[in-house]
Amino acid sequence: MTVTFRRTRFLAALAALPLLLTACAGAPEARERIATAAGFPVEASGCGFTATVAAPPERAVTMNQGATEVMLALDLSDRMVGTAYLDDAVPEKWQETYDAVPVLSKEYPDHETLLAAKPDFVYGSYASAFAAESAGTQDELADLGIGSFLSLFGCGDNRPSADVSFDSVWDEIETVADVFGVPERAAALEREQQGQLDELAATKPGAGLDVFWYDSGDKTAFAGTGDGGPQLILDAVGATNVFADVEGGWADVSWEEVVAADPDVIVVADAGWSSAEEKIALLEKDPVLKSLRAVQAEAYVVLPFSETTPGVRLADGAVSVGTQLAELG
Image 1 (cartoon, rainbow, N blue to C red):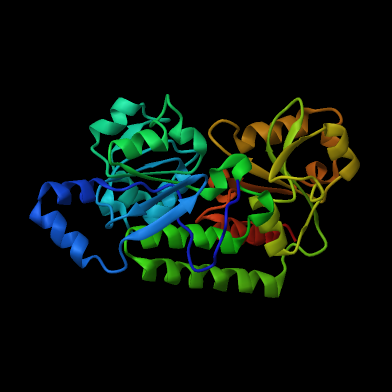
Image 2 (tube, rainbow, N blue to C red; image 1 turned 180 degrees about the vertical axis):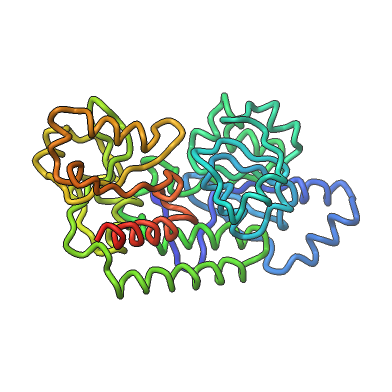
């Protein structure tokens, strides 16, 4: 199955909204909103799902931190009636607006819990959000008149990893902004992030450094590899990823391979299921790994997991890595 990306916009996994169904039933306020919503209806396609958005959603539920933070970055918390499944802390700049949104579940809510929130739209970062035991499939939600959008970074085999780029990150942000009728907010965010990347390109704080991106794992290392968020960040700061030749965004590599690479710096992802402290302790206690040059020098860069995945915080991740590399000297 082919997924097509266009810089102007791409839309995925959106079903006809309850607003349209309500209008057909004769609700005058719904008819008025549909008639006056500029730029609507919007055609949606991707991840094997195509539908039409009749009018901007008013009761959205987000699942996974990436989806939640796109909504917060676009100042759409007032359109959210629920959220679920964080990987780590929401950044301070969005904490107040996040706290005003009901948390439906620590992880994925089940279908009944989701429906109790009366959503007209569900946005998830990973296909697992739309599993039968979670929100329900997108087809099932569509049958109930609930629109849905699955991030194209979460499509699995439907989305080639080679398409991961800052442009495709901005495409997704544009998609959500278009769905909610606020395209100018996406444009402003893109300009801001492009400015940050331009500054990193000019200064190249990672130039000449070989970096091992340590996501998680103990028996083997789950490493940031050549086609995902970690690679985009390392490219942005001018550093070399020691596992850039490995396909995919992340992959298991042996500790023998890490030792052979002997990196100058280790980027350590900090997540709820695998903290930075735990990984650094493993590196410093292991009789072989503690001999790595980066471990000996304590040359660690720590980054929240949510700034390592393709999404609205990826540019923040690049800025943070650049700043920490500069501080390491």
